[in-house]
Image (cartoon, rainbow, N blue to C red; front, side, top):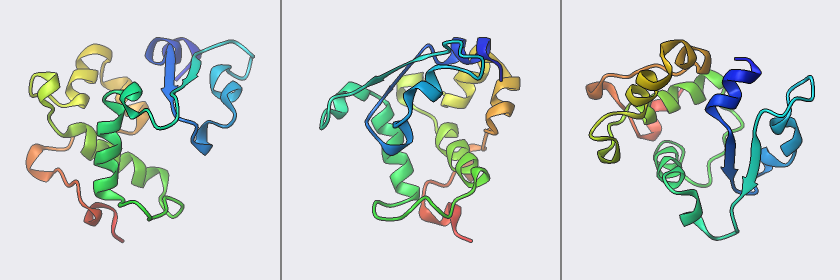
Length: 133
């Protein structure tokens, strides 16, 4: 994707203290030690600080209920899940999907790099059956 594109898309990352963010410098700096983003952590037990990110978390938990591990999922499984979640239309986006809005603002090429695809409305699945093997 390149540092410039990464900087444009993710100037700031706001997150919780999950284990995937235990090495913030690896995310903040690229392989040439050039800063590409800044990581900030929300206060514990303050989901309101993460705004609509919590809505995506709820969608993820519809597909992978709490108590189930993500360990067996491949990157393709995660891409499929996020394609379905981000194809779901949102009232906050004037009844557009996040994929549609992102595509309009940044283009299809970046979506392809993320491995995310638009899923037609009638085919969106937000249930555990989406990732059943």
